[in-house]
Amino acid sequence: MLKNLFLIALLSIISSSCGSTSKSGDNKHFSTHIPSGYELVWQDEFEPINSASKSNTLPSTEKWWYKIAEPKWVNNELQKYVEGVFEGDTVSYVSEGTLKIVAKKHGDNIISARMNTHESWLYGYFEARLKVPGGKGTWPAFWMLPKDFKSWPRDGEIDIMEYVGYRPNVVQSSVHTKSYNHVQQTEKTATKTIENAETDFHIYAVEWTPDYIKGFVDGEEYFHFDNDKRGNVDTWPFDKPFYLKLNLAWGGNWGGSQGIDDSRLPATYEIDYVRVYQKR
Image 1 (spheres, rainbow, N blue to C red):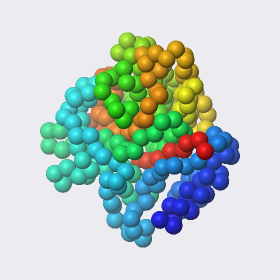
Image 2: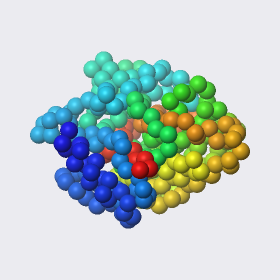
Image 3: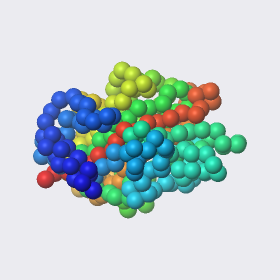
Image 4: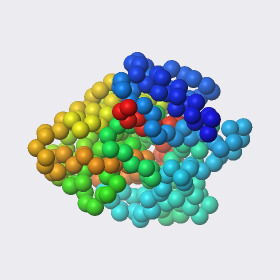
């Protein structure tokens, strides 16, 4: 508890600064990209319960829940979504200060994890420090859906970061609504080419306010979507709490659109931290 209070205080002090990242401690980075006026309200640093232990541990079930789903449940993706450990195979674990989500072969299936926060938030600055897997077939994402989700795309979707392995070093941020979505090819989206997405960690974030949604990588804005202020849920459904999602898909309509390369399995999506900030 004291450690968490200290970390919250430290991050709150630096959250009004601007710039790149600085290293603090053994392996944790503290972002200095947080816009002015925000304070830390939620975090997962993916540290083991016993910091002296070198053993792998499972993610906190107090913070995260798993979506269980069969192959082709959505987007014709080929993976089976399971809990952290499935029939002796581990697809989600914490080690050396980071979360690993792994897509791997298990009998006739490819298994992986889709993790979701129990908590949800209305507006804020949401960021994670990530390293993505590459190769044809991989499709890692960091994104958001509404807590009271009923139907897609009317309820809205915020994609903080999506990556498809056939397109190395190109990251993407998007929003989807009934009027703007990829099925109609009207989604509001942007891409950015960065260096070493598959070998280095980068910080991916969105700032979501009543007026706009902005997407960032390493503090640089590359996506911007404005609220048209028409009061139309078809164009702006982003006025209710959303929760965070981390998943690693395999194949599917987008991830497999250029084919898949089974030799890239197992594939590992690595997450250093996830943090949520809101206005004071």
